[in-house]
Length: 172
Length: 100
Figure (spheres, each protein chain N blue to C red):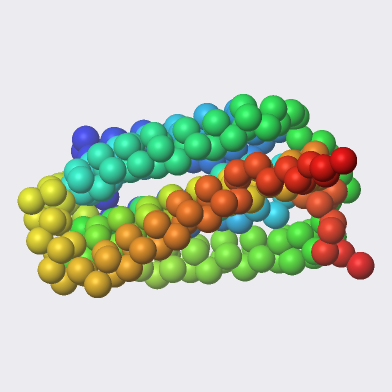
């Protein structure tokens, strides 16, 4: 047990506990807070993998911006405790065999390829200095396309969330 | 040193938790958060593979996934607000306007 493995297990346990808590909680605000814990733990995992810029962006964009949006919406809509309804029959019908199939597949892959070489801590320098040129040279076209995508998303959000125009008053 | 399979296992479990939440949750906001959880699980495997194959392209793809997640959250939450305004509920079982 070296330090890297211990840190991996610690962050992984936090991420796993957060993910299961997200499922177990019935109030959306509790689910949102546990999702923030998952994201923070994943940022720690990224740091272990040497992706320091990704870890910083994960905290700023995901745990910061996106989750604030979620919490803001929950507060705005005054979301209460989830009402339990009759479970979907399709979910039971396909979900349980799907879970079994998925776990068998994952277990098979892990057992078969458990001899893969270990990933060293900080093996890859993921600093902004190395990611920047890649993002602005090799991936320039996808980068520009995502800027158009985010522009469309902003306009769509503004149009969708804005109040519908009230009916014009009739002039008597 | 942590084997790559450990990272992939964690990523797969997070993704599976997201799928489970998507299927069993009835609150539309929680369903949305389950989608975010799935995207996070995929991001972890992207970064793990980037470190394993010594290619930074995997880390660049994480940014694109994050941008898509941000756009999806913005539009999706706007749709949720619009749905709440007309239907007065967040329960997906009661939003049955398209059902026969």
